[in-house]
Length: 325
Figure 1 (cartoon, helix red, strand yellow):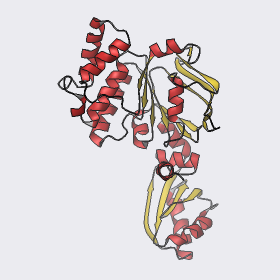
Figure 2: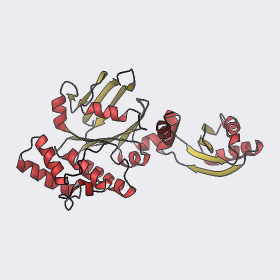
Figure 3: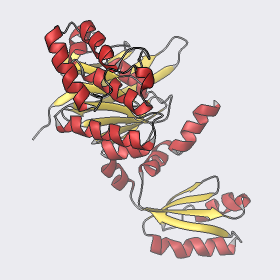
């Protein structure tokens, strides 16, 4: 049975003043009732894509539609169908949680009775009933994020957009936010989220697009993407890192090796069978006097998928952006 399409993106491109292409020729669909993720490092184009979908940005070319409504021509209709939780918290530290929601209810032109009903439901949903009448400055990071989500849900949207929903939160708060996102999906809501956390994408997303340099590198469910990579990963740590290029050359192209990549401390080798590959790896290492400090192997992970499609790990990508390289 064909699944109903909630979002259709066709050849979407956004170029900023100065010629910077933030996203280039993006095409994808989001199905009703799924959690769809845009996974990539900061600067990859995730937030630009999201802001275009929620009508804050106008695409340079291409198009996007939300439940059949064009995001440019039907922007007013689209805004009535969606909720948005931004990456940057828009919380006034002196207002209480309830006052935030009441103010937003007035902006959405909800009647007092309707707003009061929705606010009571949402405070219960995100477990902020007891803290509802305390100033937001007394809230923890996790509580503030829960208030953000409640604000995004106030208009009772068909589709909820989450921009880096757990950025900067401690582990326990992140897990609680994950629970809320799963609960919303269980209620039939369509959710689109951006993240640069591999575990978050793996745990939450039904399907995800890996985006890098403004382009979609691959798209599918986390399981499909990992299975599609094929083979297991053998990771070597060398005592003498100067030997890494020599060992990479020796192993590249050998029958049991699908892909060989240098890492800061050794090699990551994608193999059909660790048992078959291990003897060839050890033989080459001994012959070239490459002393191995550590060997491990594992099934493909999302970071391995990211490496295969972008040429570097997510961690390296984030570090590159942070250092400006």
